[in-house]
Image (cartoon, rainbow over all chains, first blue to last red; front, side, top):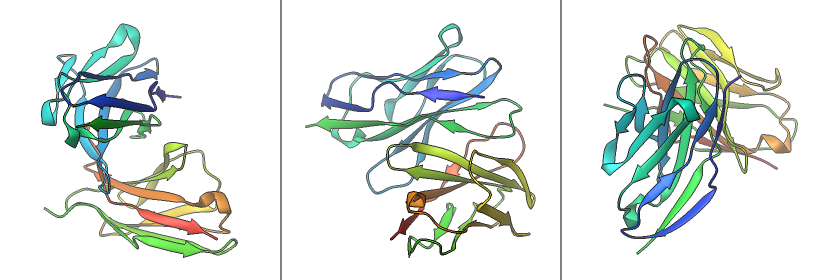
Length: 114
Length: 113
């Protein structure tokens, strides 16, 4: 069965600091990987996704993630965070051919201080 | 384009009662997914419906059930409610074919007193 680990539960950064949120998954086969974001009072939104091809994926709002297959990782990065990036971030994985079940990590709450 | 809509926004029940939550997918999406977001447990997959059939189920007891209607909308039913069922229930939808990301609704907050 697939599983996802997000190591940081709560991250506090000052504006303009760089961000890296860790995500590791466990599954032996081919996976699709996602990062979702939930801004305060809003629904979950897709930030970026990896299906195949270039392991460096660029998403909305300046976010990017790198898929490192050998490390089973899909870390989210942003060079310079803004106050408006304050949100909860969820890493998710689904096994290709795995009946569309998406497994989410427990989420990382990011607080950006002006 | 209208997003995924869920109703009601908030539902208050007591132990032992039954709850029905509703979801309308984005137009054109045939797959509907249900997730439970309980405090401290993150998002957990509950059910996946596609073309009116249950395709996959998470690790939840049988009192969690649902169905998908011909117009692809879906209901989640929770019977014999327990206090630990208090959570935000999220519905998502996607196209069935290929690798399609899921689009989420705002959720129904179910509170058990």
